[in-house]
Length: 410
Image: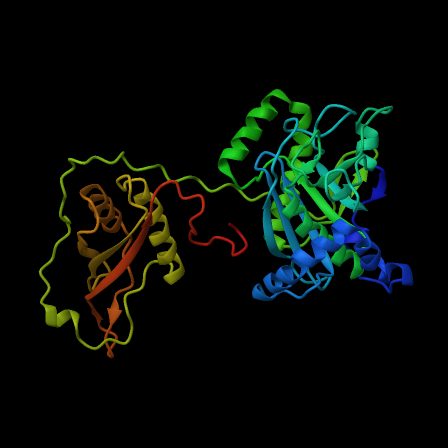
């Protein structure tokens, strides 16, 4: 068992304590500086309104910052009770980047640190407009970085220039500074900030990281821990307990396994303007009056409504790759029959779909497993006609909501 030398999480989970008078005057002291006072005047009312619009309580008693180097992104999460889950308040753009992936290990390497830190300084008179200090080097860095010159003076700051910090534009740092100062005044002595190499849920970013790790195997343990902490927070919306062992390595105290990445759906064949529309191969002549009788239950997709919603969302994503250029979104009604045995037949696609999309929809519907058929009052299975609209967005769909997406995702 590695010797634990530094408990890193106490300040994340301890409740707020009564503040001495000088702490209650924290905002007043900050506002004594012109830039901070002007930042409060410009942003505080807007931030309060944004909090209210998202059902959040101002000021946040707990604030959490996480930054993603490759993706140039900084996120603010907040809550007001220690046991409550964090809620995302806002994402901001990091406007410049120094160095590359990997941790900071010595002074002058231009690297942005990677790891688990907290805000240790409010700098209202920074040469970079406003600045929030990051406690680099921490206990891990002091072991793993250069013993004589590990570097320091790492800030989240304005002015959009950097030699190893996390730079924001001046209007953005004003908002972040006011948020942090308000949480500090509300009792949060230590505001955690996690710095990750990439946004791990982004396939493109993760692929870039994996290529980098091939050349830097020594960096893999840290990258793996960072990924575990990222996904733990994504799932729990709580910060894990993290310690630093005698070797300077971060360790999560909670048992947690990174969830497997979803297997991507292979793209359908490229769009062809001259493709020929096909008709459903599964046809059955059913009199209209048999489809309109009284029933006590509608046909049910295998796995229920949630599974059907997932199928429709997945199909919409596939169809996005088949849309001609210039179209951003289409709504495609699909009519089909679920017969008394639960088989899907007589699939008809609205003319809004081109031939390639039409063919793909029919093929996917005809391969569906049998449904639970509609039932009459006497529980007799009967055929039923259904219509489902598929929403299709232009590919790629990085900013399009998808089925089962976390409500906090972008």
